Length: 247
Image (tube, rainbow, N blue to C red; front, side, top):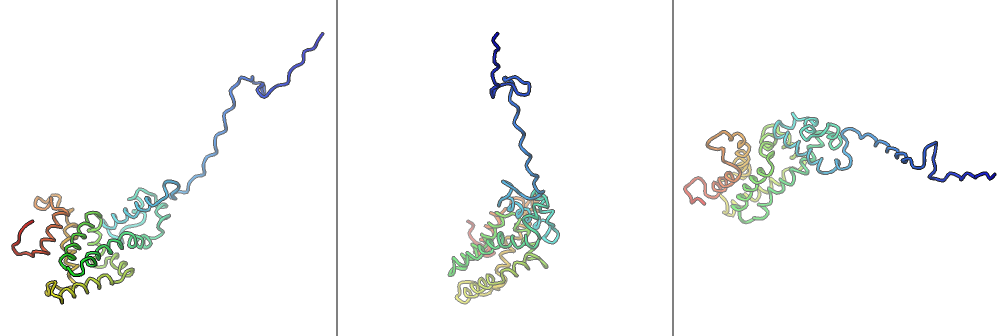
């Protein structure tokens, strides 16, 4: 009697009592990623856009309620972030304010001097373009008029103090020197007070723009915007208050 030999099990043979046709065991689940520290941006959340959102939120709150009365936590909530994320980018309000001055205000401040540089022998063009630029900046940056009134031209404005500490008054002296020179050359009204020219332009442009939010229910002024203010200022500068030809 022949004894039939049993073949050795192959790799596809039953294992542990299961048949070769059984479904393969599922792959082990990947280990969970380590928890991210609260507030600390990672991956796509880290980048200039998040930092820029915080700066935008800071400017909006500073214009609305002032620098001194605004906390870092409020800025974080305004931007939709946690206080921890705010602290990741800016440790103190002073650090935040310095960044705002360097990145947001310094370029605007430099832009205000361009009309004087580009029109050294044409004071009417320089002053008119400066007025138009003030209106355009206020239109492009809605926070600018209110913040300027609250923190620059008001008594005790923190932003004015910090900007003076950082930049001094070189730009102001250059503008005053140009105005005095134009007066001596007979190109500009000698009766003007040089130190009041820029303040006057601010009064003609920034103050109406800052007040325009209050005119929404005013039947007389509710349709006045940046375009109308710019046209009014230029007409006043060029023609004065005497009769003139309208454009």
